[in-house]
Image 1 (cartoon, one colour):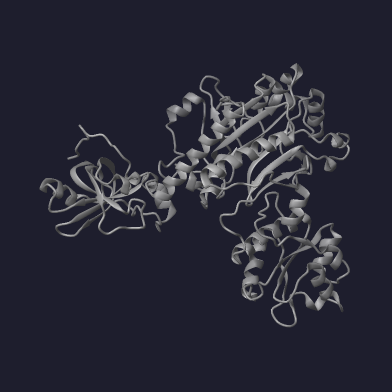
Image 2 (cartoon, helix red, strand yellow):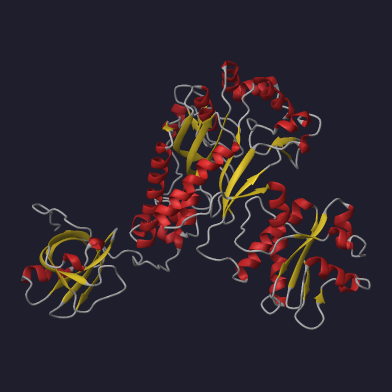
Length: 594
Protein backbone atom coordinates (compact mmCIF):
# COMPACT_ATOMS: atom_id res chain seq x y z
CA UNK A 1 0.00 0.00 0.00
CA UNK A 2 1.29 3.46 -0.87
CA UNK A 3 2.74 5.61 1.92
CA UNK A 4 2.38 9.35 2.39
CA UNK A 5 4.82 12.26 2.78
CA UNK A 6 3.17 13.35 6.03
CA UNK A 7 5.75 15.21 8.11
CA UNK A 8 8.26 15.36 5.25
CA UNK A 9 9.12 18.20 2.90
CA UNK A 10 11.48 17.96 -0.07
CA UNK A 11 14.61 20.00 0.65
CA UNK A 12 16.59 19.37 -2.53
CA UNK A 13 16.18 18.14 -6.08
CA UNK A 14 18.13 14.96 -6.85
CA UNK A 15 20.52 16.55 -9.36
CA UNK A 16 21.38 19.56 -7.17
CA UNK A 17 23.50 17.85 -4.50
CA UNK A 18 27.28 18.20 -4.61
CA UNK A 19 30.34 17.53 -2.44
CA UNK A 20 29.72 20.87 -0.69
CA UNK A 21 26.54 19.31 0.75
CA UNK A 22 28.39 16.47 2.57
CA UNK A 23 27.05 16.18 6.11
CA UNK A 24 23.71 17.84 5.31
CA UNK A 25 20.37 16.26 6.21
CA UNK A 26 18.28 16.16 3.04
CA UNK A 27 14.93 14.95 1.75
CA UNK A 28 14.68 14.02 -1.93
CA UNK A 29 11.83 12.65 -4.06
CA UNK A 30 11.71 10.99 -7.43
CA UNK A 31 11.47 7.84 -9.54
CA UNK A 32 13.67 4.74 -9.30
CA UNK A 33 15.96 4.65 -12.31
CA UNK A 34 17.42 1.34 -11.17
CA UNK A 35 18.02 -0.71 -8.04
CA UNK A 36 21.20 -2.72 -7.45
CA UNK A 37 21.05 -5.45 -4.81
CA UNK A 38 24.54 -6.51 -3.66
CA UNK A 39 23.34 -8.61 -0.71
CA UNK A 40 24.07 -6.56 2.40
CA UNK A 41 24.36 -3.43 0.28
CA UNK A 42 21.63 -1.88 -1.88
CA UNK A 43 21.95 1.15 -4.13
CA UNK A 44 19.04 2.99 -5.72
CA UNK A 45 19.49 5.61 -8.45
CA UNK A 46 16.72 8.14 -7.78
CA UNK A 47 15.73 10.40 -10.68
CA UNK A 48 13.85 13.66 -11.02
CA UNK A 49 13.90 16.37 -13.68
CA UNK A 50 17.26 17.71 -12.48
CA UNK A 51 19.20 14.46 -12.57
CA UNK A 52 20.07 11.35 -10.55
CA UNK A 53 21.39 10.81 -7.03
CA UNK A 54 22.46 7.53 -5.45
CA UNK A 55 20.68 6.29 -2.32
CA UNK A 56 22.70 3.90 -0.14
CA UNK A 57 21.40 1.18 2.23
CA UNK A 58 23.77 -1.04 4.25
CA UNK A 59 24.19 -2.93 7.56
CA UNK A 60 23.56 0.27 9.50
CA UNK A 61 20.20 0.87 7.82
CA UNK A 62 17.04 0.12 9.78
CA UNK A 63 15.76 -3.33 8.66
CA UNK A 64 12.29 -2.10 7.73
CA UNK A 65 13.83 0.60 5.52
CA UNK A 66 16.29 -1.91 4.05
CA UNK A 67 13.37 -4.20 3.12
CA UNK A 68 11.60 -1.31 1.37
CA UNK A 69 14.75 -0.65 -0.64
CA UNK A 70 14.97 -4.36 -1.47
CA UNK A 71 11.40 -4.35 -2.83
CA UNK A 72 11.79 -1.15 -4.87
CA UNK A 73 11.61 -1.56 -8.64
CA UNK A 74 12.06 0.67 -11.68
CA UNK A 75 9.72 3.68 -11.75
CA UNK A 76 8.57 3.33 -8.13
CA UNK A 77 8.06 6.80 -6.67
CA UNK A 78 10.07 7.29 -3.46
CA UNK A 79 10.74 9.91 -0.83
CA UNK A 80 14.09 9.46 0.95
CA UNK A 81 15.53 11.18 4.01
CA UNK A 82 19.20 10.89 4.90
CA UNK A 83 22.67 12.36 5.23
CA UNK A 84 24.83 13.32 2.27
CA UNK A 85 28.18 11.51 2.41
CA UNK A 86 31.19 11.06 0.16
CA UNK A 87 30.79 8.26 -2.33
CA UNK A 88 33.48 5.56 -2.16
CA UNK A 89 33.22 4.63 -5.86
CA UNK A 90 32.83 7.98 -7.57
CA UNK A 91 31.21 8.36 -11.00
CA UNK A 92 31.99 10.97 -13.64
CA UNK A 93 28.85 10.05 -15.61
CA UNK A 94 26.47 12.04 -13.40
CA UNK A 95 26.77 15.48 -11.80
CA UNK A 96 26.18 14.00 -8.31
CA UNK A 97 28.84 11.32 -8.82
CA UNK A 98 30.98 12.41 -5.84
CA UNK A 99 28.27 11.86 -3.22
CA UNK A 100 25.44 9.59 -2.13
CA UNK A 101 22.70 9.72 0.50
CA UNK A 102 22.88 7.43 3.53
CA UNK A 103 19.13 6.81 3.93
CA UNK A 104 17.48 6.97 7.37
CA UNK A 105 13.83 7.09 6.23
CA UNK A 106 12.22 5.85 3.03
CA UNK A 107 8.61 6.16 1.88
CA UNK A 108 7.20 4.27 -1.12
CA UNK A 109 4.77 6.89 -2.42
CA UNK A 110 3.64 4.89 -5.44
CA UNK A 111 4.42 1.49 -6.92
CA UNK A 112 4.75 0.97 -10.67
CA UNK A 113 4.07 -1.82 -13.10
CA UNK A 114 6.91 -2.80 -15.40
CA UNK A 115 6.78 -0.07 -18.07
CA UNK A 116 6.34 -1.04 -21.75
CA UNK A 117 9.87 0.22 -22.45
CA UNK A 118 12.92 1.09 -20.37
CA UNK A 119 13.15 4.73 -19.33
CA UNK A 120 16.68 5.46 -20.55
CA UNK A 121 18.21 8.43 -22.35
CA UNK A 122 19.12 6.62 -25.58
CA UNK A 123 15.93 4.60 -25.96
CA UNK A 124 15.83 2.31 -28.99
CA UNK A 125 12.08 1.77 -28.64
CA UNK A 126 10.03 2.65 -31.75
CA UNK A 127 8.69 6.19 -31.64
CA UNK A 128 5.05 5.15 -32.08
CA UNK A 129 5.26 3.05 -28.89
CA UNK A 130 6.89 5.90 -26.99
CA UNK A 131 4.25 8.34 -28.23
CA UNK A 132 1.48 5.99 -27.13
CA UNK A 133 2.97 6.14 -23.63
CA UNK A 134 4.12 9.75 -23.93
CA UNK A 135 3.82 10.39 -20.18
CA UNK A 136 6.52 7.71 -19.71
CA UNK A 137 8.63 8.91 -22.63
CA UNK A 138 8.64 12.41 -21.11
CA UNK A 139 10.45 11.01 -18.06
CA UNK A 140 13.57 10.55 -20.20
CA UNK A 141 16.20 13.20 -19.51
CA UNK A 142 16.72 14.39 -23.14
CA UNK A 143 13.02 15.12 -23.61
CA UNK A 144 12.72 16.77 -20.20
CA UNK A 145 15.68 19.00 -20.98
CA UNK A 146 14.13 19.93 -24.35
CA UNK A 147 10.84 20.92 -22.71
CA UNK A 148 12.70 22.89 -20.03
CA UNK A 149 14.75 24.69 -22.70
CA UNK A 150 11.56 25.53 -24.57
CA UNK A 151 10.15 27.02 -21.37
CA UNK A 152 13.32 29.10 -20.91
CA UNK A 153 13.04 30.40 -24.48
CA UNK A 154 9.48 31.52 -23.78
CA UNK A 155 10.48 33.30 -20.55
CA UNK A 156 13.52 35.03 -22.07
CA UNK A 157 11.42 36.17 -25.04
CA UNK A 158 8.75 37.64 -22.77
CA UNK A 159 11.35 39.39 -20.61
CA UNK A 160 13.12 40.80 -23.69
CA UNK A 161 9.98 42.20 -25.26
CA UNK A 162 8.72 43.64 -21.97
CA UNK A 163 12.08 45.41 -21.60
CA UNK A 164 11.64 46.85 -25.09
CA UNK A 165 8.22 48.38 -24.48
CA UNK A 166 5.96 45.65 -25.86
CA UNK A 167 2.51 44.91 -24.47
CA UNK A 168 1.30 41.30 -24.29
CA UNK A 169 -2.26 41.02 -25.62
CA UNK A 170 -4.27 37.85 -26.18
CA UNK A 171 -6.24 37.56 -29.40
CA UNK A 172 -9.27 35.26 -29.89
CA UNK A 173 -8.95 31.51 -30.44
CA UNK A 174 -12.31 31.27 -32.24
CA UNK A 175 -12.32 33.64 -35.21
CA UNK A 176 -13.81 34.26 -38.63
CA UNK A 177 -12.47 31.92 -41.30
CA UNK A 178 -10.18 33.91 -43.63
CA UNK A 179 -7.74 32.63 -46.29
CA UNK A 180 -4.16 32.39 -44.98
CA UNK A 181 -2.53 29.70 -47.09
CA UNK A 182 -3.61 26.49 -45.33
CA UNK A 183 -6.95 24.95 -44.49
CA UNK A 184 -8.67 26.21 -41.37
CA UNK A 185 -9.68 23.99 -38.49
CA UNK A 186 -13.39 24.73 -38.15
CA UNK A 187 -15.44 24.86 -34.94
CA UNK A 188 -19.22 24.45 -35.34
CA UNK A 189 -21.44 26.87 -33.42
CA UNK A 190 -24.32 25.46 -31.39
CA UNK A 191 -25.96 28.84 -30.91
CA UNK A 192 -25.51 29.96 -34.53
CA UNK A 193 -26.55 26.66 -36.08
CA UNK A 194 -24.93 26.02 -39.47
CA UNK A 195 -22.19 28.59 -38.91
CA UNK A 196 -18.57 27.98 -37.97
CA UNK A 197 -15.69 29.61 -36.18
CA UNK A 198 -12.13 28.91 -37.33
CA UNK A 199 -9.09 28.30 -35.16
CA UNK A 200 -6.48 30.97 -36.02
CA UNK A 201 -3.72 30.11 -38.47
CA UNK A 202 -2.09 33.21 -36.98
CA UNK A 203 -3.30 36.35 -35.15
CA UNK A 204 -2.60 38.33 -38.35
CA UNK A 205 -5.74 40.41 -38.71
CA UNK A 206 -6.20 41.02 -34.98
CA UNK A 207 -2.67 42.25 -34.45
CA UNK A 208 -3.06 44.68 -37.35
CA UNK A 209 -6.25 45.95 -35.73
CA UNK A 210 -4.32 46.41 -32.46
CA UNK A 211 -1.94 48.73 -34.34
CA UNK A 212 -4.97 50.76 -35.48
CA UNK A 213 -6.09 50.79 -31.83
CA UNK A 214 -2.90 52.53 -30.73
CA UNK A 215 -1.02 49.63 -29.11
CA UNK A 216 2.17 50.37 -31.02
CA UNK A 217 4.17 47.35 -29.76
CA UNK A 218 2.24 44.08 -29.41
CA UNK A 219 3.61 40.68 -28.38
CA UNK A 220 1.91 37.34 -27.84
CA UNK A 221 2.98 33.73 -27.47
CA UNK A 222 0.19 32.76 -29.80
CA UNK A 223 -1.22 29.30 -30.45
CA UNK A 224 -1.79 28.74 -34.17
CA UNK A 225 -3.56 25.96 -36.08
CA UNK A 226 -3.15 24.84 -39.69
CA UNK A 227 -4.78 21.86 -41.34
CA UNK A 228 -1.93 20.83 -43.64
CA UNK A 229 0.32 17.86 -44.33
CA UNK A 230 2.89 17.35 -41.59
CA UNK A 231 6.70 17.16 -41.75
CA UNK A 232 9.48 16.89 -39.20
CA UNK A 233 9.37 20.69 -38.73
CA UNK A 234 5.57 21.08 -38.83
CA UNK A 235 2.71 20.36 -36.41
CA UNK A 236 -1.01 21.12 -36.89
CA UNK A 237 -0.89 23.25 -33.72
CA UNK A 238 2.13 25.32 -32.81
CA UNK A 239 3.25 28.43 -30.96
CA UNK A 240 4.49 31.69 -32.46
CA UNK A 241 6.38 34.44 -30.71
CA UNK A 242 4.12 36.89 -32.50
CA UNK A 243 4.75 40.62 -32.74
CA UNK A 244 3.61 43.78 -34.52
CA UNK A 245 5.17 47.27 -34.39
CA UNK A 246 3.92 50.71 -35.46
CA UNK A 247 5.87 53.69 -36.84
CA UNK A 248 8.74 51.46 -37.97
CA UNK A 249 10.26 50.11 -41.17
CA UNK A 250 11.88 46.80 -42.10
CA UNK A 251 15.24 47.55 -40.51
CA UNK A 252 13.66 48.33 -37.13
CA UNK A 253 11.86 44.98 -37.08
CA UNK A 254 15.02 43.14 -38.09
CA UNK A 255 17.03 44.81 -35.34
CA UNK A 256 14.54 43.98 -32.58
CA UNK A 257 14.48 40.34 -33.65
CA UNK A 258 18.25 40.08 -33.98
CA UNK A 259 18.43 41.35 -30.42
CA UNK A 260 16.05 38.61 -29.32
CA UNK A 261 18.12 35.89 -31.00
CA UNK A 262 21.31 37.28 -29.51
CA UNK A 263 19.73 37.21 -26.03
CA UNK A 264 18.43 33.64 -26.44
CA UNK A 265 21.70 32.20 -27.69
CA UNK A 266 23.77 34.02 -25.07
CA UNK A 267 21.60 33.02 -22.10
CA UNK A 268 20.78 29.46 -23.16
CA UNK A 269 23.83 28.32 -25.11
CA UNK A 270 26.51 30.81 -24.08
CA UNK A 271 27.06 31.80 -27.73
CA UNK A 272 27.70 35.37 -28.87
CA UNK A 273 25.99 35.83 -32.24
CA UNK A 274 27.55 38.19 -34.79
CA UNK A 275 25.15 41.03 -35.60
CA UNK A 276 23.69 42.09 -37.95
CA UNK A 277 22.68 38.84 -39.62
CA UNK A 278 23.43 38.25 -43.30
CA UNK A 279 20.86 39.67 -45.74
CA UNK A 280 20.16 37.77 -48.97
CA UNK A 281 17.63 38.49 -51.70
CA UNK A 282 15.06 35.83 -52.57
CA UNK A 283 16.41 35.71 -56.12
CA UNK A 284 19.99 35.13 -54.95
CA UNK A 285 18.90 32.48 -52.44
CA UNK A 286 16.95 30.54 -55.07
CA UNK A 287 19.64 30.81 -57.77
CA UNK A 288 22.52 29.93 -55.42
CA UNK A 289 20.98 27.48 -52.97
CA UNK A 290 17.72 26.38 -54.62
CA UNK A 291 15.78 27.37 -51.51
CA UNK A 292 14.29 30.44 -49.84
CA UNK A 293 15.58 29.04 -46.53
CA UNK A 294 19.20 28.29 -47.46
CA UNK A 295 21.58 26.37 -45.22
CA UNK A 296 24.77 28.43 -45.58
CA UNK A 297 26.86 26.39 -43.14
CA UNK A 298 28.61 24.81 -46.14
CA UNK A 299 29.35 25.69 -49.75
CA UNK A 300 28.44 23.76 -52.92
CA UNK A 301 26.46 26.58 -54.60
CA UNK A 302 24.29 26.00 -57.66
CA UNK A 303 26.01 27.11 -60.87
CA UNK A 304 24.13 28.11 -64.03
CA UNK A 305 25.49 26.20 -67.05
CA UNK A 306 22.81 27.29 -69.51
CA UNK A 307 24.99 29.48 -71.73
CA UNK A 308 27.92 27.06 -71.59
CA UNK A 309 25.85 24.12 -72.88
CA UNK A 310 23.42 26.04 -75.13
CA UNK A 311 24.94 24.71 -78.37
CA UNK A 312 25.55 21.14 -77.16
CA UNK A 313 23.45 18.63 -79.09
CA UNK A 314 22.12 16.78 -76.03
CA UNK A 315 18.32 16.58 -76.13
CA UNK A 316 17.92 16.87 -72.33
CA UNK A 317 19.84 20.16 -72.25
CA UNK A 318 18.40 21.44 -75.52
CA UNK A 319 14.80 20.78 -74.51
CA UNK A 320 15.20 22.55 -71.17
CA UNK A 321 16.75 25.64 -72.77
CA UNK A 322 14.27 25.83 -75.67
CA UNK A 323 11.33 25.66 -73.21
CA UNK A 324 12.63 28.61 -71.20
CA UNK A 325 14.29 26.51 -68.50
CA UNK A 326 17.92 26.14 -67.55
CA UNK A 327 20.79 23.70 -67.05
CA UNK A 328 22.38 23.97 -63.61
CA UNK A 329 24.84 22.00 -61.52
CA UNK A 330 26.49 21.55 -58.14
CA UNK A 331 30.10 20.47 -57.68
CA UNK A 332 30.96 18.12 -54.83
CA UNK A 333 34.64 18.86 -54.26
CA UNK A 334 36.97 15.88 -53.62
CA UNK A 335 33.95 13.55 -53.57
CA UNK A 336 34.81 11.12 -56.38
CA UNK A 337 36.02 8.47 -53.94
CA UNK A 338 32.89 8.75 -51.79
CA UNK A 339 30.25 9.22 -54.48
CA UNK A 340 30.59 5.96 -56.35
CA UNK A 341 28.55 5.16 -59.46
CA UNK A 342 26.18 3.15 -57.26
CA UNK A 343 25.63 6.13 -54.95
CA UNK A 344 25.09 8.45 -57.92
CA UNK A 345 22.41 6.03 -59.17
CA UNK A 346 20.70 6.37 -55.78
CA UNK A 347 20.94 10.15 -56.02
CA UNK A 348 19.29 9.89 -59.45
CA UNK A 349 16.38 8.05 -57.86
CA UNK A 350 16.31 10.70 -55.13
CA UNK A 351 15.87 13.59 -57.59
CA UNK A 352 13.28 11.65 -59.60
CA UNK A 353 11.34 11.22 -56.38
CA UNK A 354 11.08 14.99 -55.96
CA UNK A 355 10.04 15.83 -59.51
CA UNK A 356 13.14 15.84 -61.73
CA UNK A 357 13.32 13.71 -64.88
CA UNK A 358 16.86 12.57 -64.21
CA UNK A 359 20.41 13.47 -63.22
CA UNK A 360 23.43 13.95 -65.45
CA UNK A 361 26.87 13.66 -63.89
CA UNK A 362 30.61 13.98 -64.37
CA UNK A 363 32.73 11.87 -62.00
CA UNK A 364 36.42 12.72 -62.21
CA UNK A 365 38.03 9.86 -60.30
CA UNK A 366 40.75 8.85 -62.79
CA UNK A 367 42.85 10.73 -65.29
CA UNK A 368 39.89 11.15 -67.65
CA UNK A 369 36.52 12.31 -66.28
CA UNK A 370 33.62 9.87 -66.57
CA UNK A 371 30.75 11.84 -68.12
CA UNK A 372 27.24 10.35 -68.37
CA UNK A 373 26.46 12.36 -71.54
CA UNK A 374 29.91 12.20 -73.14
CA UNK A 375 28.69 10.78 -76.46
CA UNK A 376 26.71 13.97 -77.13
CA UNK A 377 29.73 16.26 -76.62
CA UNK A 378 31.83 17.84 -79.31
CA UNK A 379 35.53 18.60 -79.15
CA UNK A 380 36.33 20.86 -76.20
CA UNK A 381 32.77 20.81 -74.79
CA UNK A 382 33.67 18.85 -71.65
CA UNK A 383 36.65 21.11 -70.93
CA UNK A 384 34.44 24.19 -71.25
CA UNK A 385 31.91 22.71 -68.81
CA UNK A 386 34.59 21.77 -66.29
CA UNK A 387 36.20 25.21 -66.56
CA UNK A 388 32.85 26.98 -66.11
CA UNK A 389 32.24 24.92 -62.96
CA UNK A 390 35.78 25.18 -61.58
CA UNK A 391 35.77 21.37 -61.39
CA UNK A 392 39.03 19.49 -60.87
CA UNK A 393 40.25 15.93 -60.63
CA UNK A 394 38.60 14.27 -57.62
CA UNK A 395 35.34 16.21 -58.00
CA UNK A 396 31.82 15.06 -58.86
CA UNK A 397 29.48 17.25 -60.92
CA UNK A 398 25.70 16.70 -60.68
CA UNK A 399 23.51 18.37 -63.32
CA UNK A 400 19.76 18.93 -63.63
CA UNK A 401 18.06 20.40 -66.73
CA UNK A 402 14.41 21.47 -66.68
CA UNK A 403 12.21 24.51 -66.10
CA UNK A 404 13.54 26.65 -63.23
CA UNK A 405 10.67 25.68 -60.94
CA UNK A 406 12.05 22.12 -61.08
CA UNK A 407 15.78 22.69 -61.54
CA UNK A 408 16.36 25.02 -58.59
CA UNK A 409 14.46 23.23 -55.79
CA UNK A 410 15.74 19.85 -57.04
CA UNK A 411 19.37 20.96 -56.86
CA UNK A 412 18.65 22.67 -53.54
CA UNK A 413 17.41 19.39 -52.06
CA UNK A 414 20.22 17.44 -53.76
CA UNK A 415 22.80 19.85 -52.31
CA UNK A 416 21.53 19.15 -48.78
CA UNK A 417 21.43 15.38 -49.37
CA UNK A 418 25.00 15.31 -50.74
CA UNK A 419 26.10 17.58 -47.89
CA UNK A 420 24.69 15.09 -45.38
CA UNK A 421 26.24 12.09 -47.14
CA UNK A 422 29.67 13.73 -47.29
CA UNK A 423 29.37 15.06 -43.71
CA UNK A 424 29.90 18.64 -44.90
CA UNK A 425 27.34 20.24 -42.56
CA UNK A 426 29.01 21.30 -39.29
CA UNK A 427 27.27 20.71 -35.99
CA UNK A 428 26.89 23.41 -33.32
CA UNK A 429 27.20 26.18 -35.92
CA UNK A 430 24.32 28.64 -36.23
CA UNK A 431 23.96 30.67 -39.42
CA UNK A 432 21.08 33.14 -39.50
CA UNK A 433 20.05 34.68 -42.83
CA UNK A 434 17.39 37.27 -43.59
CA UNK A 435 15.73 36.58 -46.95
CA UNK A 436 14.43 39.83 -48.44
CA UNK A 437 12.93 41.20 -51.68
CA UNK A 438 10.37 38.45 -52.17
CA UNK A 439 8.16 38.60 -55.26
CA UNK A 440 4.78 39.92 -54.21
CA UNK A 441 2.90 37.61 -56.57
CA UNK A 442 3.37 34.03 -57.65
CA UNK A 443 1.48 32.30 -60.44
CA UNK A 444 -0.80 29.45 -59.44
CA UNK A 445 0.17 26.61 -61.78
CA UNK A 446 -3.34 25.13 -61.86
CA UNK A 447 -5.38 28.29 -62.43
CA UNK A 448 -2.71 30.44 -64.06
CA UNK A 449 -3.80 33.35 -61.83
CA UNK A 450 -1.47 35.58 -59.84
CA UNK A 451 -1.82 35.06 -56.08
CA UNK A 452 -0.15 36.75 -53.09
CA UNK A 453 3.03 34.92 -52.04
CA UNK A 454 2.56 36.10 -48.44
CA UNK A 455 -0.88 37.67 -47.86
CA UNK A 456 -2.85 40.50 -49.48
CA UNK A 457 -2.00 42.98 -46.69
CA UNK A 458 1.74 42.94 -47.50
CA UNK A 459 3.15 46.29 -48.58
CA UNK A 460 4.79 46.34 -52.05
CA UNK A 461 7.98 48.34 -52.50
CA UNK A 462 7.07 51.90 -53.47
CA UNK A 463 8.92 51.77 -56.80
CA UNK A 464 6.91 48.68 -57.82
CA UNK A 465 3.42 50.14 -57.31
CA UNK A 466 3.21 51.12 -61.01
CA UNK A 467 3.32 47.43 -62.00
CA UNK A 468 0.57 46.17 -59.68
CA UNK A 469 -1.96 45.52 -62.42
CA UNK A 470 0.15 45.81 -65.57
CA UNK A 471 3.08 43.48 -64.77
CA UNK A 472 2.66 41.56 -61.46
CA UNK A 473 5.93 39.65 -61.97
CA UNK A 474 7.88 42.89 -61.38
CA UNK A 475 6.29 43.67 -58.01
CA UNK A 476 8.61 43.14 -55.02
CA UNK A 477 7.17 42.89 -51.51
CA UNK A 478 8.44 44.55 -48.35
CA UNK A 479 8.59 41.07 -46.88
CA UNK A 480 11.34 39.24 -45.02
CA UNK A 481 11.94 35.75 -43.67
CA UNK A 482 14.36 34.86 -40.89
CA UNK A 483 16.06 31.50 -41.50
CA UNK A 484 18.49 29.45 -39.44
CA UNK A 485 20.51 26.50 -40.76
CA UNK A 486 18.06 25.79 -43.56
CA UNK A 487 14.90 26.19 -41.46
CA UNK A 488 12.43 29.06 -41.78
CA UNK A 489 11.92 30.57 -38.32
CA UNK A 490 9.71 33.45 -39.27
CA UNK A 491 7.90 35.20 -42.07
CA UNK A 492 6.97 38.86 -41.84
CA UNK A 493 6.26 42.01 -43.77
CA UNK A 494 5.33 45.64 -43.67
CA UNK A 495 1.55 46.04 -44.05
CA UNK A 496 -0.57 48.09 -46.40
CA UNK A 497 -2.20 50.88 -44.40
CA UNK A 498 -3.66 52.99 -47.20
CA UNK A 499 -7.30 52.15 -47.94
CA UNK A 500 -7.05 52.97 -51.66
CA UNK A 501 -3.86 50.94 -52.10
CA UNK A 502 -5.47 48.00 -50.34
CA UNK A 503 -8.40 48.16 -52.75
CA UNK A 504 -5.97 48.27 -55.67
CA UNK A 505 -4.22 45.19 -54.28
CA UNK A 506 -7.50 43.31 -54.01
CA UNK A 507 -8.23 44.19 -57.65
CA UNK A 508 -4.79 42.93 -58.71
CA UNK A 509 -5.66 39.65 -57.00
CA UNK A 510 -8.98 39.65 -58.93
CA UNK A 511 -11.06 39.64 -55.75
CA UNK A 512 -14.68 40.79 -56.13
CA UNK A 513 -16.25 43.38 -53.83
CA UNK A 514 -18.48 40.66 -52.39
CA UNK A 515 -15.48 38.42 -51.71
CA UNK A 516 -13.52 41.26 -50.10
CA UNK A 517 -16.42 42.21 -47.88
CA UNK A 518 -17.13 38.61 -46.84
CA UNK A 519 -13.53 37.83 -45.94
CA UNK A 520 -12.00 41.12 -44.82
CA UNK A 521 -14.81 43.63 -44.54
CA UNK A 522 -14.19 44.59 -40.91
CA UNK A 523 -10.45 45.11 -41.51
CA UNK A 524 -10.98 47.15 -44.67
CA UNK A 525 -13.49 49.30 -42.80
CA UNK A 526 -10.98 49.87 -40.00
CA UNK A 527 -8.41 51.30 -42.42
CA UNK A 528 -10.75 54.20 -43.13
CA UNK A 529 -10.16 55.58 -39.64
CA UNK A 530 -6.44 56.31 -39.62
CA UNK A 531 -3.82 53.55 -39.64
CA UNK A 532 -0.18 53.97 -38.57
CA UNK A 533 2.58 52.43 -40.71
CA UNK A 534 3.24 49.03 -39.18
CA UNK A 535 4.75 45.62 -39.74
CA UNK A 536 5.55 42.48 -37.87
CA UNK A 537 6.41 38.83 -37.90
CA UNK A 538 5.96 35.63 -35.92
CA UNK A 539 8.88 33.41 -34.87
CA UNK A 540 8.17 29.70 -34.55
CA UNK A 541 8.85 29.00 -30.87
CA UNK A 542 8.81 25.26 -31.50
CA UNK A 543 11.26 25.55 -34.41
CA UNK A 544 13.78 27.70 -32.57
CA UNK A 545 13.56 25.27 -29.64
CA UNK A 546 14.13 22.33 -31.98
CA UNK A 547 17.26 23.92 -33.44
CA UNK A 548 18.68 25.11 -30.12
CA UNK A 549 18.14 21.66 -28.58
CA UNK A 550 19.67 19.88 -31.58
CA UNK A 551 16.46 17.85 -31.92
CA UNK A 552 15.52 16.02 -35.11
CA UNK A 553 11.82 16.85 -35.01
CA UNK A 554 9.30 19.25 -33.52
CA UNK A 555 7.90 16.21 -31.70
CA UNK A 556 11.03 16.23 -29.54
CA UNK A 557 10.27 19.72 -28.17
CA UNK A 558 6.48 19.36 -27.94
CA UNK A 559 5.02 17.76 -24.83
CA UNK A 560 2.13 15.98 -26.53
CA UNK A 561 2.70 16.08 -30.30
CA UNK A 562 0.70 14.82 -33.26
CA UNK A 563 2.10 12.32 -35.76
CA UNK A 564 2.11 12.59 -39.56
CA UNK A 565 -1.61 11.91 -39.98
CA UNK A 566 -2.39 14.64 -37.39
CA UNK A 567 -3.48 12.13 -34.72
CA UNK A 568 -2.23 11.90 -31.15
CA UNK A 569 -1.39 8.31 -30.33
CA UNK A 570 -1.61 8.61 -26.54
CA UNK A 571 -5.21 9.85 -26.27
CA UNK A 572 -6.28 8.40 -29.64
CA UNK A 573 -7.61 11.68 -30.99
CA UNK A 574 -9.31 12.69 -33.18
CA UNK A 575 -12.18 10.42 -32.14
CA UNK A 576 -15.84 9.94 -32.94
CA UNK A 577 -18.50 11.84 -31.02
CA UNK A 578 -21.99 10.65 -30.16
CA UNK A 579 -24.98 11.37 -32.38
CA UNK A 580 -26.60 13.62 -29.77
CA UNK A 581 -23.63 15.99 -29.87
CA UNK A 582 -23.82 16.10 -33.67
CA UNK A 583 -27.59 16.70 -33.62
CA UNK A 584 -27.21 19.69 -31.27
CA UNK A 585 -24.74 21.22 -33.74
CA UNK A 586 -26.89 20.44 -36.74
CA UNK A 587 -24.18 18.27 -38.28
CA UNK A 588 -24.90 15.18 -40.36
CA UNK A 589 -21.95 12.96 -41.24
CA UNK A 590 -21.59 11.78 -44.80
CA UNK A 591 -20.33 8.22 -45.09
CA UNK A 592 -17.35 7.82 -47.39
CA UNK A 593 -15.74 4.69 -48.72
CA UNK A 594 -12.46 3.81 -47.03
